[in-house]
Amino acid sequence: MRAAQVAARWTTGGCCPATMGRLTTLILNAAPRADGPPHTQQVDAMNRTKLSALARASFWSLVVLLASGHALVRADDGRASLAGTKPNIIVVMTDDQGYGPVGEHGHPWIRTPHLDELYRTSMRFTRFLVSPTCAPTRSALMTGRHPMRNGVTHTILERERMTLDAVTLPQVLKSAGYATAMFGKWHLGDEEAYQPHRRGFDETFIHGAGGIGQAYDCSCADAPGNKYFDPVIRHNGSFVKTRGFCTDVFFSAALGWIKQARQSEAPFFAYIATNAPHGPFIAPPKNTGRFTDLGFGKAQAGFYGMIENIDENMGRLLEKLDEWQLFDNTVVIFMSDNGMTGAGSGRLGRPLGRTADNRPLLPYNAGMKGLKGSADEGGVRVPFFVRWDGRIKAGQEIDRIAAHIDLFPTLVGLAGADEPAGQVEGRSLLPLIEAPDTEWEDRYLYTHKGRWKTGANPDDFQWQGCAVRNQRFRFVDGIALYDMQEDPGQTTNVIKDHPDVVSAMRSAYDAWWKATRPLMVNEDAPMSPTRPFHVLYEKQVESTGIPAWKPPRL
Image (cartoon, rainbow, N blue to C red; front, side):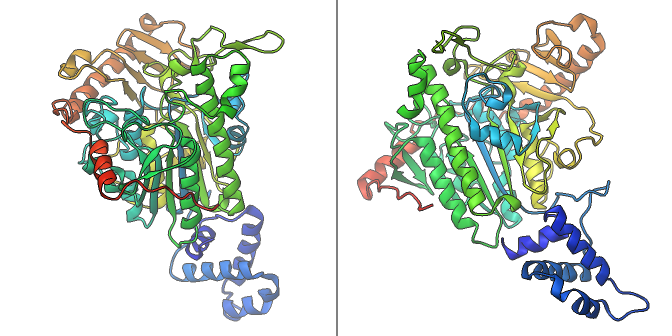
């Protein structure tokens, strides 16, 4: 572990309880006494033989920090605070997986042993809400504010570009001394000024557009002719040719960078954003085979095969974090970007295949209404697992609503950095993580799927594909109200039973829309006449060629 992090962890209760207890006893015994010699002499005399080399180093870190006026950092209720502890941070976000396809979420036949392990060793937010589609959620993570206030109202047609006026999460973390890297799907602008290596990431290893091989009549386009196997990747601004399946490649690159970054004194932030299981639904044969053997169609076998492949890569990540002894100073977060996609998951209620004893295998969405693209719960609820061994209690569940806009202030709080003034509208989740029973004021979370046609007036779509959510209710499209505590599957519209609730939510949403409308800065953007990834790729082919990427030795 880095020396600076050792010192920081001892001052914030970061060691294991038993070790912290022994060190605390030594510190208390070492305190100056009115009738005794100076405390440093007492420690030398009484405790020299009791301290291992690590304990002595940790103890003297405490002495130095206490002498300089720094007391143990504590939350208001006396528990150790996580704010300013500067752990390493790893965020893994999958694409279109949603909430259902995780074994521990009750899925009856998906095999996700490593995600299940992470589930059991993490604190879980059971009502974590994002946007109905991918680019919007990504912009919320990067800025801490609603996607439409970043100008992101679509996933293509220049409306996926995150405003250049925003201060990004990696930029803020860098101000606190973090090394930053991202791997996989960026999807917040393919023009150079919008690229992640221009927006705070030291290391970037990405594909273009919203998926490998995508290309639209605008700037949103990946490298020409790109595929899920052996993809061309833009690595720190230059293209390289990789070998293998895309998800395997992204995790290998991330692990190589983490292996190197762990040697530094600086903490690190690694953002791993897979393009899987987004369509086209392609997975390695070893992952699709068991599904086709059960009678699944090609697309569904690809979708679920990609999820099981993601699980294998999560296993690789967890194994290496354990081998490299990083779990005690690293926060690991797992989530998805929107609800499960119906295109890959299959139609709810219809069998995908059958077991050997002829039992039907049905799609599973955890009893929720809505899929990707919907403003209902199933379109926006995703997994949110948070693991930090020794610091965040595993197995706890938090049922307070939380959202993508909350990740930015939470991670900035961990880093001890300052939020950009006037930008962040999410809340730090650290108080809930530290004390799940803490008082937590209710609030409204706003959803809008956007995606109106280019050139249309957004105001004409204000009440279409929208929702307002508080802890109890979901108000959808201005015409339906659901009691999410009594009816989490949204089977009964109770709008007539709660006129005051409806009035308050309608007024709040209308005010929010009016404040948001001027920030939709991409609505009049002209379509780019070129595809930047295509232009840069062709230029590199003609000048230096596309070199083979060398996978790291792990």
